[in-house]
Amino acid sequence: MQRVEGQSIYLTRGDTAEFAFTATNDDGTDYEFQNGDQVFFRMALKAGDDVAVQKECIVDVENNKAVLILEPEDTQDCKFKVYRYEVELIAIEDGGHYTFITDQSFEIGKEIEAHE
Image 1: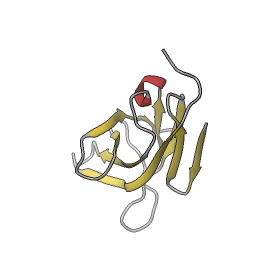
Image 2 (image 1 turned 90 degrees about the vertical axis):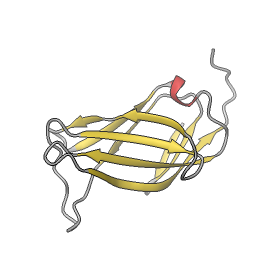
Image 3 (image 1 turned 60 degrees about the vertical axis):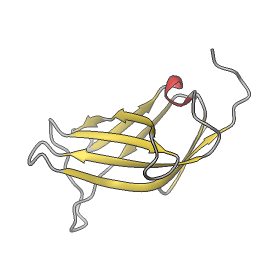
Image 4 (image 1 turned 180 degrees about the horizontal axis):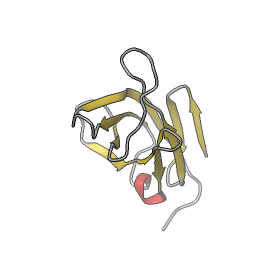
């Protein structure tokens, strides 16, 4: 099961999930993703801790979003806790690193089924 409320995410450990992210410029306008942009999702128990999950998102230029696909193995070793996540853009245009979602909650929930 997955649930998104604002930028807070809940996911049952070991589930497959897809999340779409958009980015905003400093002036509040939508950032237009470009071919060659890279977007990374990172999750840790708290800022400064080791990263528990890091995945590169698929940049969908046509629909102007970055898509994160989590597979069961991505969260199977996570604890049943509330993690913190961020999403970072590395822009092809200037090579700059721009964290456009920062320090948001990502709860890993309990599962009944044991995945093997």
